[in-house]
Length: 126
Figure 1 (cartoon, rainbow, N blue to C red):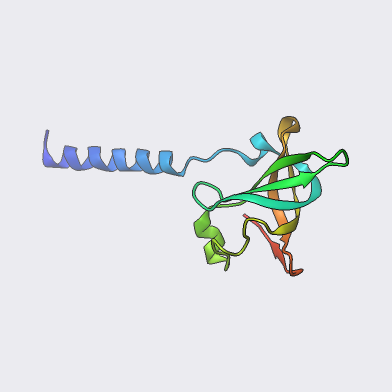
Figure 2: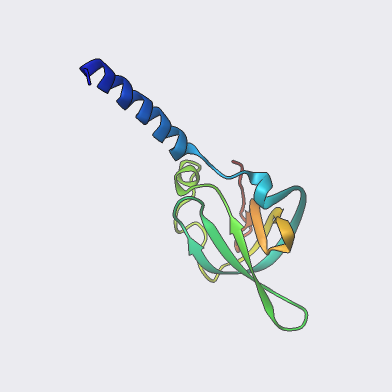
């Protein structure tokens, strides 16, 4: 194989790999873009890592039980660029979350905004 053929092969492979690396699931595959709700509860767990930051919120029910909601945002890098960090929201914080509902009745939200215990409201956009 000539040097030029090797270079072309490497360029084709690099283009293919970058396309694979940027592949992402569809918002519409997981969320209902026309249905939003607000939930209020306590942050029980935080995943501040790729591909999406996730906040698990324990929402109490009228019968005394609670339901765990999986609230997803964008990547940590995007949030940090917007001024958020790992400590912006802490486990144990009581929050009010607005988000797009997950499909198929899953307790899943795509974050629109979150109100922190001190009343600060953080808005999220992709």
